[in-house]
Image (tube, rainbow, N blue to C red; front, top):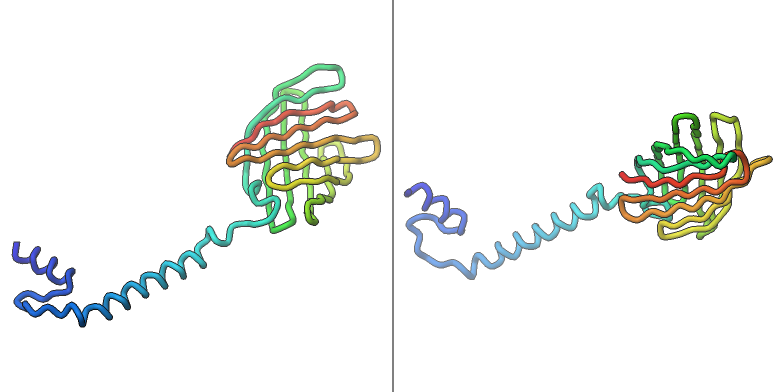
Length: 185
């Protein structure tokens, strides 16, 4: 019991057996402690990893996503697909990889995209079919509308990110008619 009282007294800034109240002399000490605590908090908030989070138009997309949806083919059939997406974001630039597969259909899309004040431009490739092309569009605040073009292929792509949910809708004019995909992280 005496040991516990000694710890409490030390924590309160008083030594056992010392009944003198030095409140006035403790005020500068308390002020220094408060200032030190505030400085440590400020230092940690400025240098914490969360303050280094990505910024820019693609920031909300950064990371790995997974989910599924449907793919529509030119014969009118649809199939369920499973998808994985990875977005590597660096300010106004993003590298993407979207891999989707069903029982009979697979696509592996890579792209390099740059935002220039709301205008999006870049290149893309699909490795299973050996197709490459360009991307152009607009977007901000987690919502992007892009046209993917290549010789003999055009597709409208709508991508919306809200928190940990992402929706990708692709509409094309070739044997691949489109896909509707929902992803989460």
